[in-house]
Image 1 (cartoon, rainbow, N blue to C red):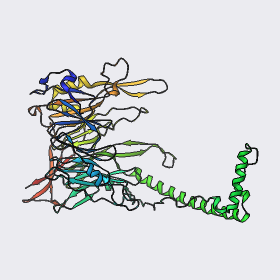
Image 2: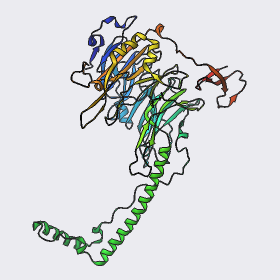
Image 3: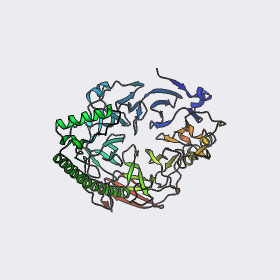
Length: 560
């Protein structure tokens, strides 16, 4: 049975909360992670438990145990939700009911749904590769369209690269998110090693045919170093002495071994070579020499290959898994890189390195790839959403251990036309100052950022826990999932003891200010749809690129 929780009852507020001037609220044991673009529905996922918050009524409903899709997993109004079970079977929650998709599981290999279009008519995901060829990619990209009767149509496989950046079979190729018109899909390639991830963009042409590009291909192996031949698996097995002995010799050895154990280990331990002729021993030792020589040659070749690969990897830019988002129009993609900086010597057995997460933007029309600047302190948010107005919502990576100082997940905004993220609270102060003050009062917490395991000494710092924020497309709804357990630092804590909490902030459209900016256009250029600059554009469709006084640029289609 589905559980329903009324927020107003849970936090002791009046039912008038959702009137003309709604007040912010706390959602206990709710971890906001997805939002419908119209702001009607917010989803929570904790330990595979999915809950839905109806923003208009304040009801929180437990849906089921499954994983939400990695991208835009809801249609525009939140009536269709996609994901997968823990056994990689598809899940669609439609109009308040779980669709029966058992026929899909029986008809096709295992697959997951990751995203859905705004109109809810097309879903994308990945499935076990139906190919039976050896060493093929394990999971491949696909999409399905809803029929007019509400059922799902056939699976359509998307094209994908059959070789990864190193010339081997990629492990997975899978879509993450889809544009509202369903014609552009952003996804990822996971290389053969499972170590490196990089983006792939699928596009549907006017003829209905699909193609793909690799937006960040230029960032991989920038020095164009030759890649050695992959050594493959070592083909030989160690020689077995049994293969060089006669059945009679083996029988005699077995009898001697049995006698050894029966004597209580008082007899000499038998050696197989004692039961072999000199010719048999010479043949076995010769086989061992051949094996050892081949193993030495393979190990040298394998070491040379992996050293060359590691050197290329440290020079290359690969990307954070699922750390990418596309705007609803399918025109701009933001992607978090995962760059490793070598600290020790490359010749070290286990070289030390640091990881940073710089953010890149990619213009689908022009193919322009730009890096987003950090905020001066090495902080690079992971993109989660790109709104219709071009705003990017990002969050810092989840903490993984207490070995070093831990910063809780915090949310940031990249305004249209800007190149530096700002804290979410700075943007919130512009659109709803009262709610921003409420957030500071209710979610500024003492956070355990470091712990000395030997002495038990704690380092505690104050943070405004903006968490894992999601934002409606018009900015009228802002909600953030917070790891509440991070600020339960003592028995005297006044906090509720929730493992998770979320804030929910609503604003009237009239109360939302436009983006305040001191930017000025210093140059405007036009390009045709093939990327060729046009000095004097006439009537037609062009790509307009505006350069601003801070060095940033905005590119968009324009009809002249």
